Image 1 (tube, rainbow, N blue to C red):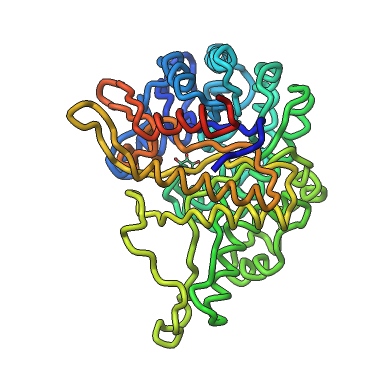
Image 2 (tube, rainbow, N blue to C red):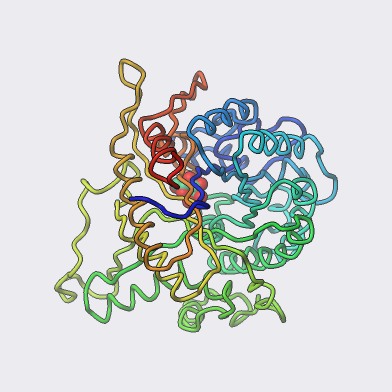
Length: 455
Ligand code: GCO
């Protein structure tokens, strides 16, 4: 498998709360993830991101490891409460300084920074004023974006406004398994709308402050299939696909919210104040601001089975339940074809100018052996097969421009704490020692030889 384009970027991704630590240093304010992780019972292993990978203090060493792997690009996120501890207003220069140093270190090593502005660590003070369900948070995000892009915009040329607004709204406000841990469908829909709106409102600010830069948003997209040809399973599929994919893709590409889902949500009384009452004049136009790329995070497919009728009346089941042998340690099915499917579908339906796989990777717990080597063959196979699926999509005309492996290093996996290891670099959380896993060596070789024909 050879990716022919000379400009294709091979990278790795992380996010601020998952790796930085230094949760209350140098003037940083509290984030909703600090508050959530500090609340007993929220995180599986009872741990927090207070220290995590201590990347805040070890970034130079981490950039050197990226260089050793030969990464073209590195995707990371900025912790809003480091920059604006009060959410708005006074700027904390020491917070900006950290990201300036990081960006300079990356550029000095020939690594392009891809900056995510929001990977879920909202300042707690803004949560106290209503968080994403409150429309005022949109303005706050635009202010924060302005501060960050004025400071870094001369050197950072790739900006991602939001990471996975579905997770930030649905997991955070409806299911309650992410910060802030609310369980309220009405506020989840408002939060989703304000995340999208703040994306669109931020786009022109980024363009003005960071000349010649490219701007996009990252969605977690899940290709779904009905488990059978039954009408009930098709409807389960329609709802799932609508809820995860179309609810976000449609408005970003100028289509308003999908009417079938609006009907479902009205029926379930999820619409605060009546049908789409949270959508104000011009919101759709703002959300659909033309972007340069779409970031796709791909981890799994979903096989949709209706819960509405008894199993015995809903047969045959055409797609079997995938067995444990094809699952990673977090119990997600390994299904590389799904990456091809979702990239192709997004390209065919929405025509983004350019796409990046902004995250793809696997959780496998392989630990260092007696020689200190981490033999994570399953991760190598996972990456090889997903790279091949992306390659097939490109052969079908999908304008894919880069691929970011999740993750550069093992880190704090949200509600799972440190129980899941997604990294191509092993992290010993006691000593902060890093070890390049076999997958990192394989990736380094791949980038040097196969990819881009660089040798
Ligand atoms: C997400 C986030 C990452 C996760 C990764 C593995 O997709 O949920 O962007 O922060 O760690 O996806 O779950």
